[in-house]
Length: 451
Ligand SMILES: Cc1ncc(COP(=O)(O)O)c(C=O)c1O
Image (cartoon, rainbow, N blue to C red; front, side):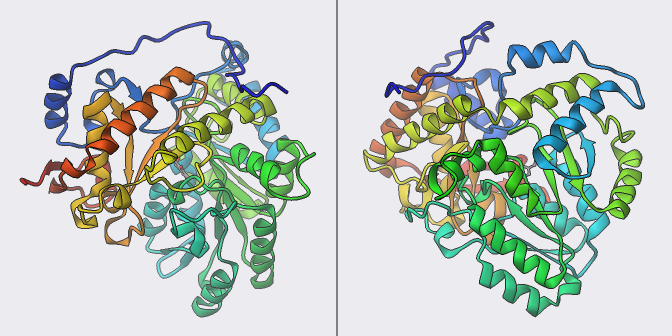
């Protein structure tokens, strides 16, 4: 096999991106209150804000879009969608939603109540917010290695099984309506969960009679990491690995904007008939009829094809290699990153990058602003602005949209990070001037602290 791993596609349609000057970016950043969410996308050169819904669809997906059956009830597209989901995930009931958080809202709205406890390896921000919205407590139980950015553990997304068991015993199993496993662990650095850990978590859940759900957003990348890093899986296909993994659970939430390779969509799965009925009833109230759930028939078609494409080995090999290339090239020049590079993103460790900025002054926001000023790159802070004082780390996530940027784009990003690294001592902390009562990072207004 040649050493060079190339993009396993050729480009049929291009979307221009726009250069801005540093002076323009200074002005744009001020106008956006130093919150990169508030920047117009057209003023961003390389947009690594998220890998969610930002991927490029394949010719097969676009062809499937044309097959979309837009019937309100019983559309053919729903059959294509649900059989693709069932083939991979194996769950009995497949409930489409407009994106992942809608699946979360329905799941927690039906399964949880005030005073309940929901353990997860690490809750994503919308997952935590949806758990807390119904008055339940969201508890992160990732292994200690998962909280140490420099630790090289191959499965840093693993759940701390002893801590999980202890939490369930302390709270009492009746107060724990479900356990969740996020694959890969986005808020913990895009780190995978091993099959052995899935099995152990599932055993703890069975012992206490608690269902196990997956937050399955990046299930294909997680499956590929298992193939690469866990003994006994090298000869299995990513699809076989995904099937085995989901077999240990009782259901999942999914944002098809990630490993569904689509620009919108999600779903909720369960094996529980009673819950499925309640979930569908709620779905009708807020999302739509159960055969479209807030999506167009064409979206269902794109997801049906996308889920299968996400599991293709050529694609996953390139995907994981490209992300690792970015991470390893900055790390070898001393830039502190969360080791190892994740599946969908590289996470800069802003506390170590900017040790002179305390967490209360948002080092992740400051570093993200500087990457934009230096090279028009947009990233996202995952730290004190996002999680408040509960933040265990201050990270800047550079999420790579699927099949969008080429090797030269990645080389450019490496160059800009290294430029910012050289001038790190001059970067100042930030203060918040406005914040919303929840999920404040989306709309907060900030400014640099006068130095
Ligand atoms: C792990 C995880 N869970 C849930 C979600 C929510 O999905 P959506 O953005 O489709 O609502 C995301 C989105 O980034 C995520 O990364």
